[in-house]
Length: 231
Ligand code: DC
Image 1: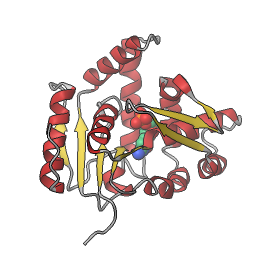
Image 2: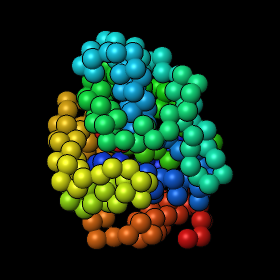
Image 3: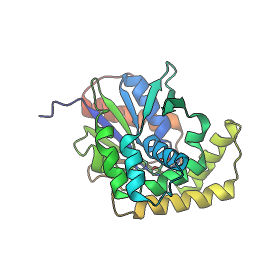
Image 4: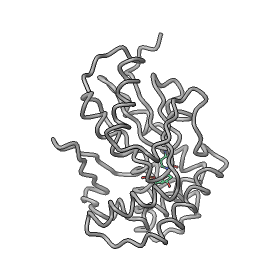
């Protein structure tokens, strides 16, 4: 019998809607949230700020091990993120940072340096873990493993709308190309490649809206963890 705090993992490719689902689930259940992508993004940002080459595995792994970050949730479910004590803001979510994160995430020593930090998020009353390898590597004994997919065109389209809504620059053709590149890098790397755990529940969200995805996830949480949260 596992006496650790319960964990629900949510994995899947870039732009599939994991972030929105995870924030919603964490709010709904009153659980903690691990945004593991943010740790890779922050590692990349910290390495670039120190003028390191992103391929310099030894130095980038040292940056990852010593990362001084804080995740400060607010009451609306959003999180303020600080690096070296200073708030990061929009740079954390930019496509440039996402692409740099995907490069450092391919380095095995960097992944190893972030492993325990991710596991430390598992605390009562429970954890929602968002990423690529949450169910396969970081929490292989998770109580429930979810895996979201959607076509690359649909994900690029969602990302485009998100960026425009935030008043940021966006070009759909560039986003489609970048998503395809990121998919290939995340799925083909030798360590912790993006793939569903054998015991994951998989949902193709291409034709679904976020409310339908949330309802699917909550039904599984209720069923598998035997807790009753009303939709
Ligand atoms: O989820 P995201 O877009 O914030 O992730 C940024 C990059 O970090 C993504 O391209 C791959 C990498 N990543 C990873 O390799 N493993 C994780 N658990 C989370 C993210």
